[in-house]
Length: 226
Image (cartoon, rainbow, N blue to C red):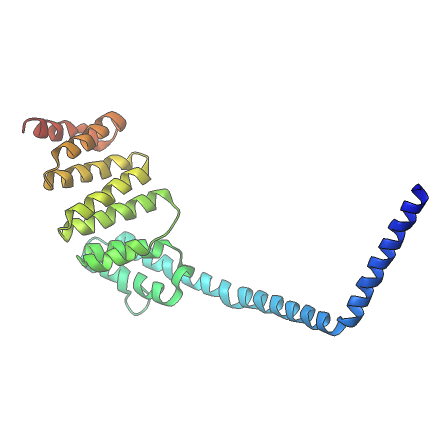
């Protein structure tokens, strides 16, 4: 019985090999063409990545270095305009984003937003901040807070409050105290004193070592005195 089972298995293997060989013989041309297409596509992708994509990334990062230096040195609107628009010799963040997109790094949108904000172009700043999709937690929270600042300047306080709350939730560190203070001030502006008081007390309870905690009592007292 065991011998019969063994023979049946052997016959099945032989049959499977025979069918595979038959399939290959019948479709040899198609299979070879498919293999060649895959090899050509792979070689094409490698060449594109090696000789087009990587050099573009390096070029974009080189331009970013100059723009970031101008950004760090910016002390007024002239400096922020230089970082954003460039000077004809080096590119600014605006041109870098237009020419290289994400190859320049996701932080380019954040820097461009800060420049537009300091130039008081709040709508343009919003577009850049909302386009920022980096994973760095500090930058992510700061971008949300900057969106809130833009809406404050546009006098859209309810929207601004929502973004300050999101920023505080995203920060989960000492920076959260700054965003909670912004949220509290905007809540007061909206007449939502209970909500503002809750923000201020969170600063005192959760971030007692932050700079905002040093004088948060005056904000608490102001509301409690009403």
